Every structure is written in C-alpha cells, then in structure tokens.
Length: 603
Image 1 (cartoon, rainbow, N blue to C red):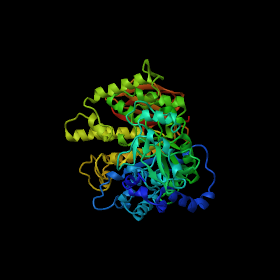
Image 2 (cartoon, rainbow, N blue to C red; image 1 turned 90 degrees about the vertical axis):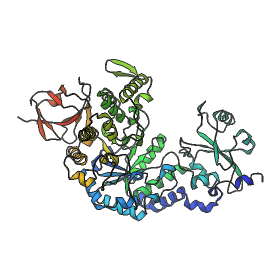
Image 3 (cartoon, rainbow, N blue to C red; image 1 turned 90 degrees about the horizontal axis):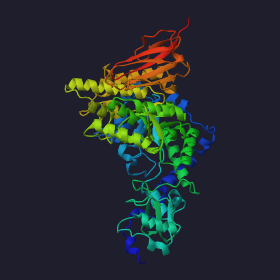
Image 4 (tube, rainbow, N blue to C red; image 1 turned 45 degrees about the horizontal axis):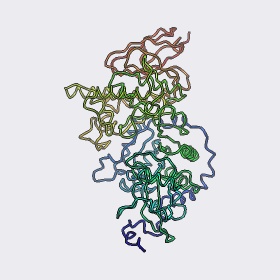
C-alpha cells in the first residue's frame, strides 16, 4: 500500500472508526428529533407569513452580551451572569430579550451542539436561564450557518459513513483522474484548487462552472487520499467558505443538513430556553424559509441576516431582519451633519414596501455585522435621486465614501469600534468633563434614533458601558466610559438611566409596532423626520432627529396634523401648535431628537 506512510500522518480523528458517530452533531440531532417528535406533533401548523407583530409585542428590546469580552476573572462567564441583581436591573432598564454571543464557541466553526465548555457548565447556564426567563426574558440563539468546522461530522463524511457525505458539498474523484488534482502537502488534510485546475475538473464533469477566474484561492478544496470504513481510498472535492470551513449542502437528497438544523433548533428551544433564532445570511432562500417555519412550529421566532439592499428585506420569510443598511448612513449623518442618505434609504423602504418594524435596529460595535453602503454596492448601475442630482449607485457610494474619508482625516477602524468610539472621535472638546458630557449627549441621541424606530431595538453590552474592552456589568471597569449598572441607575443623568426613560417611552406608545407613512422633505441638512402611524390608536407621531451642530426649524404640513395638539412623548410637555392647523412648526436644538404625538382634539 503506497499510501500507508501518508495515512499514518493523517489526524487521528480521520482514522477513528464508526464509534465516533455518537459524538457527531448529526447523530445527536437525530436523537433530539426522536425525543421531541411526540411533543412537536401536538403543536399546530406554523403560520406561513412572518409573525413580526407577535414577536415585537413580546420582546422588542434586546441586549447582546459578548461572552468573549466578559471579565469573569477566576470564575466562569455563566457564574458571572448568575446574579439576581443583574437580571433585575436589566429588566428595570427595559430589556426583554438577551443574546449570549457565541454560546457554542463557533469562532473555529460549529463542532458540536452543546454549550462551549469554556463558558461554564450546563448547570451554571441553567441557573442563568432560570433567572432571566423568570423575569420575562427571551433568549436569542444562532441557528445553523452555511458551514461547520472540520470536526467529527466532516471526518465521518470523508470516511464515507452513512449519510454524512450528504451533509456537505462533497464530490468523489475517480482514482484514474487523481493525476489532474493538485498534490496535498505532507501532514495536511486538503489543499485549495487553483481556478485553472477547476476548469479542467469542470470539463471532466466534476464541478459546475461557477468558479471565478484569476482569484488567488478558489471556493473548492481537494483532500489527500482518505481511507473509508469500507477500506477504499478516496479523494474528495469540497466547497469551502471564506474561513476554509466545509460548506453544507442544502439540496442533498439525504436532507442531512435539514436534519442537523432541526436538531440544533430543538436543542435551543427545549434545552437552552431560546425563543428567537438568528438565521445566517448566506443560507439559500429555501433553507431560510424552512428554518423560519420550523422555529414557528416550535413556538419561536426567527431573525435573519440578509445580504443586499433594501429590496432584500422585502424578500425575507423571517419574522425580523437585521438592519445592516442604516448604521453606515447614520455614521455619515454625524460625520457630515447631513442626513440626506438616511432620508433616501427610508424613502426606498417605502417604495419597496419595507416597514422599519420588520427590522432590528442595532446599536452595537461595527465589526459585529457588515456595515457599508450595501444598497449602492449591490445596485451599482441603479439611478438614485440625491438632492438635485441623479447618480448611479456606484457613483453615489464613491461620493459618500470620499466625504467620510475626508472628514475622518486619519481614518477610523470600524472592525472594533463601538458607537461611543464614534462619538469620542467627533467630539473636539479638550476639557475632560466637557468631553465626557458631549460623548454622552451624542450617544443618547443615537440611542433615541435607534430605539424610537418601529422594530426591535438591539443594544450591545459594550455600548451599555461605553467600552470595547473586557467588562463586568455589575462591577467597576477601569477602561469603560460609564459606571457599572448599579451606579448608573442611581444617577438620573447616566446613560443607563436615560436609556431606561427612552425605552419606557417606546413601550408606553407601542412605537415598536408603528407604521412608517412618510419621510417629509426638510431644508435643514442634518434633520431627519419620519412620520408614523401608531398601532391601536392610529394617531400620527413624528420622530425628528437633528444630526447637525446647528439648530433646525421646519414647517411641516400633513392632514394628520389638523385638529390635533402636539405632545413630546419623552418630556410629556406640549409642543407649540394651533390645534386646527395642518401645519406644525418643528424646532430642534443641535444634536437632539423629539418623538411627538399628534393627539386629536375634540370640540
């Protein structure tokens, strides 16, 4: 056997026998399906349309905690979170859903369905979940993505065990054609296939012609010879993602990926207490729809990451979508004191039939999700009306990027930046106390803008404390801008106390389920106005945000303003207005926001 010396160098897990199967994710998923099938069979069929209002009525305010950043010191992350006082304070602020980021330790790819042991024991997690759920919190989890790590399931697939090859986009190459394959270095499992070799393999009938020419690395890898459980040597081609992990096959006749995904959700719902699941943006449409239906069947909800522009939101089957478009435009509005790009995006939403209540408005570090001019990037030839000009998406994107680059001067690292970093860079005050107050003012303004929109509001723990370093929500953090939660909530001027008031306003008037009906034209460059129709009462409301350093004054007109009085919902004070008039004189201080209700008057 001329391959024997090489086989001796392969990773041990590739040489293991089928007894490894019990450690695989697919095996565990099938066991979960058997255990919970009788229970699931009694549940009603899922609704085919997104259940946006039902989700928002139960859990509109979300907090995400990055487990990697918790300053647990000599205890586990779960032990640090296992504090009654912590969940009482988070509930007092107004949060009702929480995501423990990377709960399964997927930074190196998904390798198991269990909790990552680095965060603590399952019993410690159960104690945390009991405290949170008893206070009305929904837990948010990540569902299966488009790839797994190179763990037991992939090893069993390469050894051709059962239906494991059906999990992945695997293609077996006939031994007579191995001469066309690149050599794999010693001690390596696989090597990337150059695009020129892919052309040859396509002509031989092994790969579809979807490869990109002239790229440094292709989407396909090839393995070294692998000895299967049937004692046959095989070399496999497999699709990989950008990280090098093997991609799942969502159209394989074995439905292995669907079975794995179902088991993952079953564990999340019945064992981890999760009610909301994020769906990976790179999944095919049919997989996203299947997963959304599965979650509804189990009494949960789905929230999708999507790729593309505004039109992509309208195509989703999930209950909510992560808004990856407006954060960049908000960043630009602050930098340029110009909200025209934001106004354009919201008008596009109205044109595409996309309501902001379908979206998750996330105030969290830029590196957590894509943050670019994605609308224009994905529609480079589409024409957009921008002020008095008509520009292509590519021209508009380049113009906005150049404007931001000019104002940033030395640049800005978006990969790790929080919104407090943004605020800090925009503040030029030299006095330490004045600088702190200015950062806080800007941060509160951003929070009002994100939270006073319909849809889910998501805030990161980093923004709650004003840090991108490790943190403890309940104890002092030397690198944090803000105090820990107990101290913040005892200070009416702190960020957390102001957040509490902002979220109270949001819930009192059901802003999370409001409907966007108009984006009024304004003359002030830094001003954004969004006119809503509130649920239940159907009264008109106006969100006005001044991103500029100058005061804004506008005369707005709408039939919905006639025979009404104007009330600032945050301060509960009346705004000047003639009750019979359809005109409203809006006045805003620099870097400030108002949420105004137009209450009908009766004569």
